[in-house]
Image (cartoon, rainbow, N blue to C red):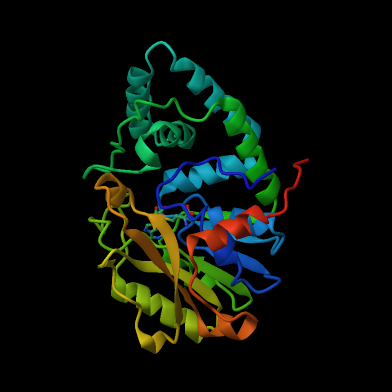
Length: 307
Ligand SMILES: C[S@@+](CC[C@H](N)C(=O)[O-])C[C@H]1O[C@@H](n2cnc3c(N)ncnc32)[C@H](O)[C@@H]1O
């Protein structure tokens, strides 16, 4: 079976995970993801057998609540999704809006899974009051319950009994992070998040982030960061400063959807930064990656059977 992915989420590192993993030391005591999202990198890492301990954190409590259900209550969540999915058939658009309203009143992570599976491009959007306001994808009905169950069971198989889940602001994690951990950070794109005070639109402040990275350096914690990038001749986000002593490489992330719409050939590149401590632990020389190369890596992934 291939690497499981129950959550459709714009910005997921699912496709880039094979190349990110190439820069992990052979064995890792614990992988920490302060901006876990769908935790695609941790799932790929568990699948590759690199570590058996994880700390997944995301400030969005509905998302960390959903990770908790996927990992620790897979049957309950699969049954709930199946019930919601079958209810949508008479009028699936009206059903989506009803579930969206219920989610905004209750924050129920199970409802969130259905919304993510059905909404446009798995793209999480909130209004200024913190209400989820993304529209349904009118052409698709969301993952079929049997596929969803397979993916949920897969993630639970890989992470249950090995994972701490939290919903903190990343800065609050510093005292819990040890120098035997490996930290992978994928903060929200700079410039994409508008309201830094809202829990749901939470973006991160550049200077605060640099200060967090300096603390990790001081504690001699190895880490990787997916951060800025470029598309055509446009760059987004600031580079991280030289004083952090990071090595930056570029990963080709494919053609941007905006460029495709405009019939252009602009390719998006994302930066991956490696900390000095990590560079001392790994043997391979960091280099830039083309999409074809990491697709090749994905094809070479072993397949495993879930118990
Ligand atoms: C780009 S996404 C991560 C995607 C993830 N790598 C994946 O593969 O799905 C960034 C995540 O950071 C979370 N986030 C935003 N601000 C945060 C903060 N201050 N502390 C912790 N998490 C935060 C968001 O809720 C979002 O899920």
